Length: 322
Image (cartoon, rainbow, N blue to C red; front, side, top):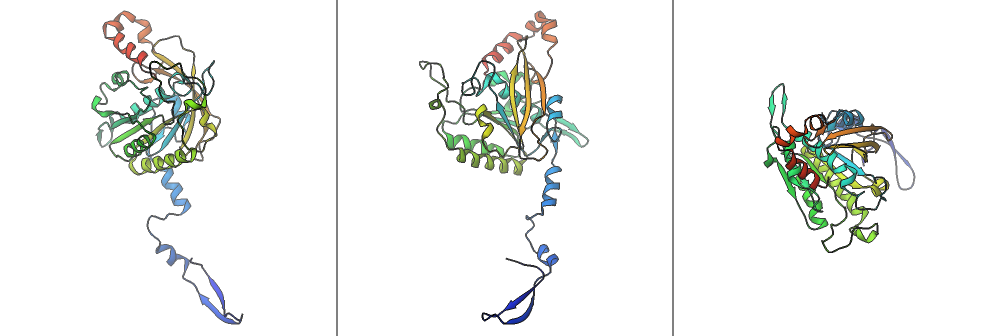
């Protein structure tokens, strides 16, 4: 261990042998490896990371950086909807709208953008779907004109270890814009099984510490590549530790239109100091185009919409458990 300044040296019998000079602080600091940063330098580097619009102005205003920062994790906590307990199958996934909102943000991060130096090509969206909830055709209309369908990759691991590995590897790829996943969700039932209940036995047996370690791995992987991890968690995850930059609780609000989702999003914490719990925003999503609504064209001209092929899109959206 290096110490600074002057230190009195003594013999074993306690006699003073004089002073011993120690290296100058500046010299020692200059000799440290380049990867070691002071707290101030680290803070400046973290705050300088680019923030990209989430595709939803209301959500951008809620996020600490005014958007989604490249190389970060965002955690979407699916809160229970009215009439469902926090351990029901609904609260863990589709009905809350958390997966839908995460996919909308992924779409915004992936699509081609024009900058002062030219057009930046679209990057890939990776969906890690162990449960089988995700139905790719529901998202394809969103990608039209901005992101080729080939840039949507779906992985369906069969084990916890494979799921952790798939998320980690996808986040390490510089060509990936966003990774959407809902680890530790309820294992889907087979056709002959009864409807899911709130029994803890329906949950995947796993260690909280193991998944906390996995979240840390994902955070480091995202920071290294610039990809964004959009991790959907069940409502019971409120009390668990997290490495996400911001933790956002998502609940569904009533909506009178088929292709419109109304969601309430509130910040419940995060690792970034600016992610102060308490902020709330209401987001209206146009599910047909994958962005913030409201939906006007479908209500005003339903016949024309049907001629443009709306029934297939609507049916796919209905089939998609988002």
